[in-house]
Image (cartoon, rainbow, N blue to C red; front, side):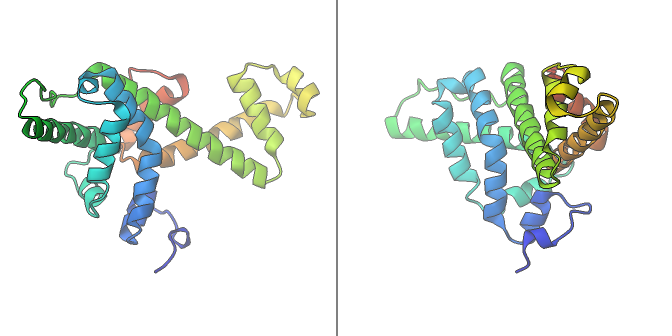
Amino acid sequence: MADLDEFPSTHLTFLERAISLGKIELARSHVMSHAYAPLCAYVRAGRLRNIGTPEDLVGGFIGSRFARDDYFLLWLTQTPPITLRRWLVNGLVFYAHEHVAQERRARRATELAAPDASLDPEPWRALDRAWRRGVLQVACDRVQLAYTREGRSDFWRLFTRHVLEGVSYPALEIELSIAATRAPMITRTALRRLRAEIELLLADERIAQPEREAEFRAILVDDDDANA
């Protein structure tokens, strides 16, 4: 079987390529690394926390659904398309229903209330915040690694010190020996590279192109108003 890295991304996302090559375990690990913390945030912020701990509920959901070889294929073939985070939350809520039903049967108890199938706004915002932080971190890690491989790690350092920490270009000229006149161009280039990585991650989640600009802004400013 061909290795995943041998195939150009073209119009296919990482998950689409992994699934098309039968690398289901790779797809599972990829999704779990992005989704576990945001799903726990969703449980923690809403009514699902009354059913079980975030770790137990999300862990049970992942063990139940991700074990199915066709789980992500079902997501990819949804019509109309649905974003990965919404697909996973829908699945988590359905799993919670199953969990409550099993507990009722096992204990012959009715005090456990079935969770509402609707998506709570506040938990959804908590999930979005956690998900976006994860996307930004992965994108930053990728760009930083690329600069390191190119022997230009100072360029990434300049970008983070100026954009994230607010250090002026003249001060960074002293710190990093990069001329202040070159710094704006370096910053713009780093931002373009960061945006490109974020775009890849959003495409992987099947966020529609018209919605990606709002999502990109939300990722950079931690804005709750964008709707993915």
